[in-house]
Image (cartoon, rainbow, N blue to C red; front, side, top):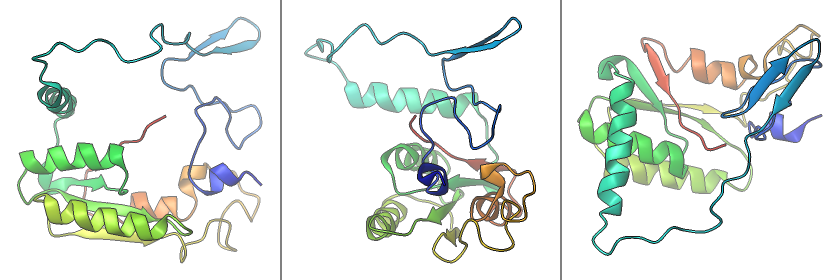
Length: 188
């Protein structure tokens, strides 16, 4: 049993749940010359914050970076659902997108179980109240749609990706009915 996989918290690594199947993470490199070699990038050269100019517009620069990222990925607001987890990463991107598409972007989430559940519910409610999201907010409850239940392909010993088993399948299939895009943001 791999608890991080069951909790949908993949490590920043090449490991997967499958033997001889690897994930190529951001900025890592794969080489094959008879054998597979996976290499991570070197560590960042700076070890602390850089000196900030006295008149720096940090918030403006951050918003511009978010807008640039959204501009690179044009979306049809009527057919896009944002995976609003309640965390900082998805929340920041979704809030900025909602400001650009007033009242059009619907949201969805996989509601976790355990000690973080109350925080997740509170944060999502605050985010949806603070930004002009669309009316729809679809939830898949991980406490109800348990991974590894009897209908799960993994239990039946069928090949399956961790992202295809409940509750993750339900998030991507059931919540996106009528949607062309499910936007999700996560930190490594």
